[in-house]
Image (cartoon, rainbow, N blue to C red; front, side, top):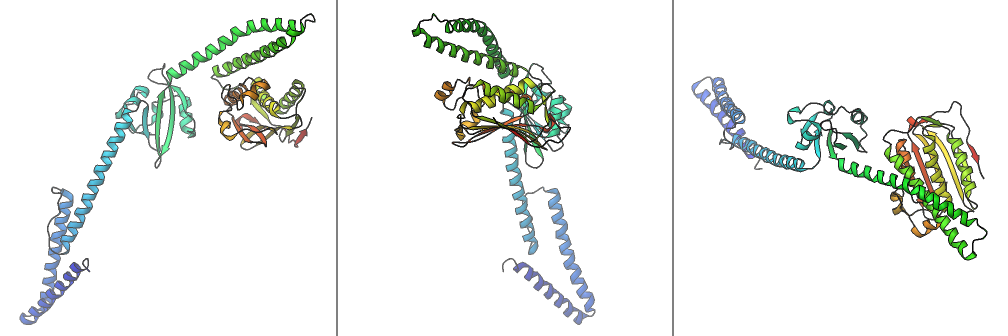
Length: 441
């Protein structure tokens, strides 16, 4: 009722004024002119307040609304409340913006806010040091300053799940790790971190491992040679035979660790993609199966399942090493009465090389760490099996050089499946369609 009262009062006043105008017209003559005059005066009064409202909204010299009788007082008061609310929101947004700028300015990493067209909206001071971009460059595209082909392709593809490594355009000795994060409506945040020290330490570590492995290989070869001679000497006392055989086994294991470390160092040191040889996956899988069966006297049945005869563009020696380690890993943990399947298939999403076993399975919490160096799910059992703990790390690095990924699916007591996913660009379609084939043994 209170909201309708002013309007009801206006209608009552208008009716009373009209009635008075009619009465005056009947008394003095020309009632129509009297009514028109009253209505014109009422209209003029409203137009006067419209002009005042427009001036108040335009000039805004006073934040307080004007005083006016009737409904115009309510209009002024309502506009005043909306205006005050807008000012409060603006102040809050300005505070949030200032805090955001302070936070990003204090960050040790470069931060660049981009719009949907990759134009610079805002930068912090570190971005100026890394990219040579200043605040006056707002509105310009980021790829005008970062012209590295890798970054341009990274920006064009829009696949920001992985960070990108590149050199700073300002200082070529500074190595950066870039990451783009999408947020809001068509907004992006470019973050860049200086990883020069980490890369330098990583290189020192790789060089140390490689050099140490090279230096250890020669004396270990001499020791292994003498141990082999002693093991084959018929005149060796019986009490020495078991210790010598244990030393031969440990020397063989150490030689395997050194060879794997050298392989890892070589893979990590190479910054270029893998070679572009045409690799016959079926032939490679058959060779690995033959070698695995020959290497173990007690080995589970190994079956080959080929659902495609497509080939892979890559380095054959590296792919052999990766696939061999997967098969060896499966053979090591699968009982002799178990089953191992090597499967090769392709579709529009790429190629999949899978090694599936019926072994004991892997705990779910251990799966993310399987490709770490020397990581063992069961240390005691793994050492008894004679593994180096580097096989799956080699697999990871080989797949990275081929743009591929490793997926592990396992369940305790139900076996494991290690699947290498190769991108479509690495797959060469077969010249003929091949039916699925299976070979067991």
